[in-house]
Amino acid sequence: MESGTHSTSVAAAPVSRRGWFQGAAAVLGAAMASPAIAQPGTGRKTVLVLGAGMAGLTAALSLLRRGHEVTVIEYQNRIGGRLLSLPLGDGMFTEAGGGHFRSNMPYVLAYVRRFSLPLLSLNDGLPRYMVEGRTGEAANPASWPWALSREERNVSVSTMLNQYLYRAGLDTDTVLDSRWPDDDALDRLGNVTLGDLIRGVGASEVFCKLLDAHGGTFTSGSMALGAIPDLAYHFGDQNLFRIQGGNSRLPLAMAAAIGRDRFVLDAPVARIDQSGPTVRVATRDGREFTGDAVVSTIPFSVMDDVEVLPHWSPRKRRMIAEMEWDRTVKIIAKTRTPSWLTRSVHGWPMAGGDRPWERVIDITGNEPGGHGSVFFYLNGSNADAVLALPKEQRAPATLAQFRQDMPDLFDEVLSTDSFAWSEQPWIKGSFGGPALGGAWMVQEWQKPEGRIHFAGDFTTLKTGWVEGAIESGLRAARQIDPQARPEGNPRIRQEI
Image (tube, rainbow, N blue to C red; front, top):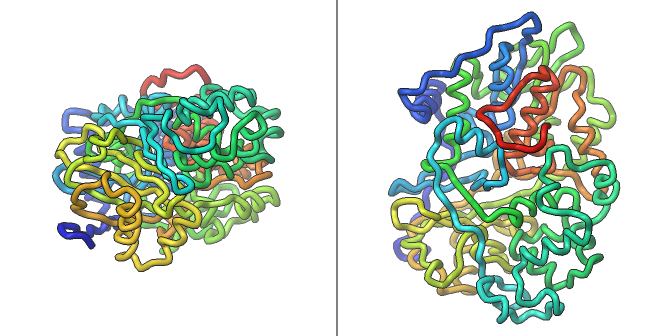
């Protein structure tokens, strides 16, 4: 490892129930009283929420507001799911999970505003690309060395992608409406990759490679139906934010509003039994909970670890078995300064290519401290290659490859580490979504199975996004109580 570099552990440290609640209360601040809970009505139900990530917290809080009794049962001994903020020292934080949000995410903004959480601003991506052994700067498309078509020259990847989507009858606003996709979109986009879709309206092969360099190697080969909402966030809005002090402050604030006595932590679910008059949920340590309904945010990647009675219907069983889960790896680095800014590259991403390091994400923005904060975002075969290494070798190997390709972008690296959600036993993957031909899952995950209602960002086409998690939690809550509402005052033009 380089001189002056050290490795810091990013494993989630065990916390007591008292410890996490005290942290949540600190987030809310001593002056903020817990919001009033609605008086129970004649339709009061007891609801068991399985999972304390953003989807489960959203469902729990919205049902609690309506006067229902809620218990949240969480596998881990912490709150937040895939929102996990890690301290870097000097008052800085990085994100093992959800790294940012954008101003085209009205639910996230409403929740952040509701709990008065301070924001940091980030730069959008102005990357340096390295594709086919050639390098080009996003800031200077006139000098790009690739054999692009005439119309693809002198314009950004974002601008050209938006034109191709327009030619295909799409746009980066409509596809973010929670009522999208309609039946026509399901039929048209569920059996075609994004690359084939845009090639059909004029995209060149090298443009698809540049799109993969910007968005990740999986981008052009992904099912168009699932890829387009993700691209709409990245290419439909340039305003990026993080929560000062870490994005995990949002789930902690929500947990404090729900109340400590409504959480059961360190309690993996072993069985869900709805064969009787109530739903019974048993945990591995022998405890049992009963309710009128269940909101399950258990990732389908580990659902086979749970006994379900009666057994899943054939389509639910097929959906759980066939959903694909990525194995994303983050290689985290803190640098002496954000020296890449002097090279006119920055943001999400600040470098991308067909190299083993894949993409480098700059999340420094205006975070105090003066140091640089980045992570490498590895997927597919790149992630597999890194995961095959001993953990202590992952960051040095990735940094060495990047230093060789782009030696001028980093100054001294102060600390490094790695994090992989596929190594977390409660999920064993990062992003879940339908495979090519799996558009039928979109309608299937919206249907309850008896008294079990499904939520989680993977039950939307906004997989990996907090906005998708919130939408899914509200959807599940409204299946139980149609009057369930989100926090704050979301400025949206659509309804779930």
